Image: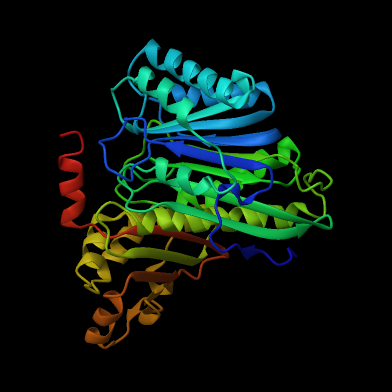
Length: 405
């Protein structure tokens, strides 16, 4: 079993040894005194890297360049911009993404193919390369610069999302930190999200990619805000080996704890994305147990968490639990109504398919808290999954009705 994994106070992506970062305001977003919109992350030594990307058939050239650079070999850095997605702009988007990595590489003193790139923001607008050229030259790197990058990634996010964990592997202390952005256009698989993880562990490439995919499937791919996915989604991990451990390989004694640490970090960041959903006032947690298999559990959890009717009921603190069952029924998961147990914030509402009398005012009061949970026991197998979402409020419509105006 994996050993102790601890979250680091005030942790961020540069909590991992050998990583520095920085950010600046380049002018890609509307000006405000405290805004940042262009960031760099740098590793003192080459990193093994892995990524999981958008499933959209329409994708940003920044994603294409990022994938190409990961395939080319070890990486040393990453450049990220917010405000403009660099998507749906033709061939110029690819040229601009390449130039941005070349500019960042020159600033970091590495080769262009050693720099990854991610973009987020408005679709259909070209990157203002003159602003990026000027901005990159102004970025200073620091050991605590991960906090600045977390802010520079934000679009409609109301707060930065960052965390770090530490654990022991191979007799060494391993640190792993991450930053993420995402508040709208969030729906599996992947979403309008960027998430970057750095670790000072040495990890073999095959395990790193496998571990990242598995972590994504139980975290970011279980988050929904509004049912829309994006052209730019990217989840990246970089491992530089600065901890001095023997490279962790699949099947090795340390593989399990590395996988679990990555999962916990990604789940934390994913929950924060759902909590900060555009206009949200409640985090929704949907836990499915006893499904026929894992695939069914995930299907059911995501469908309930993404239901507009469920999300609206949560906004109004309305224990209209029939909406949960209706969403479950259309999810495609195997269900037997006579086997279902349902709990709302820990209060049993249905047992064995039969409604249980409950104190409505007490449940309403529980649902007025910042987190609303629906736990369903399907009693058909051992499949289990958890999905995270948020309520649907008037503010979501206001934000997205004037996003470019």
